[in-house]
Amino acid sequence: MKIVLTGFMATGKTSTGKVLAQKLNLDFYDTDALIEERAGRSIPEIFSKEGEPSFRALEKEVIAEVADKDNVVIATGGGAVMDLENRARLKKNGILIALMASSEEVKKRIERSSPCRPLLSGKDKERAIKELLKERLPVYRQSDICIDTTGKSSEEVAQEIIKELSQRRALTVNRKRK
Ligand code: S3P
Image (cartoon, rainbow, N blue to C red):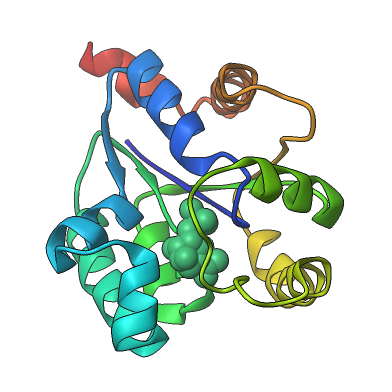
């Protein structure tokens, strides 16, 4: 079983992914963390020192590796699925789950959360979020499952995902494994 979490920045992909992996007894991978490990620097540093194309190249490399794994939950960065090749790799033998939130909710969470988002820094956040979200929503909506995360904790979102997967009988394979 391969579960891939996608969705806009600050929708809780990493925190939900960790909870989900623990509940389902699967390994957890976070592509942003793997990119930082590989580059030996933080994502804002990669963006500022090497530029977005360099970040996207690293992202592609990491996705090509983790997408081949089985019995995993993979949390991806918000822009990863915008690349066709990444999307195809992540979808192959996997279930793509998009965590959704409105632009207002995203803005609130970004203002509260610590990691710096280079795609938004120095910009009018409200406008930048709205524009990016508009461009990305059609892609996120193509996911196998879309979950609204507004007002929900990671625990609640993970429970909702498990319920959805059970209803689709997508958890049968994993249950047999245990
Ligand atoms: C990005 C989202 C970030 C990170 C990078 C680019 C994006 O991850 O990959 O800053 O293009 O939306 P989160 O979605 O975890 O914030």
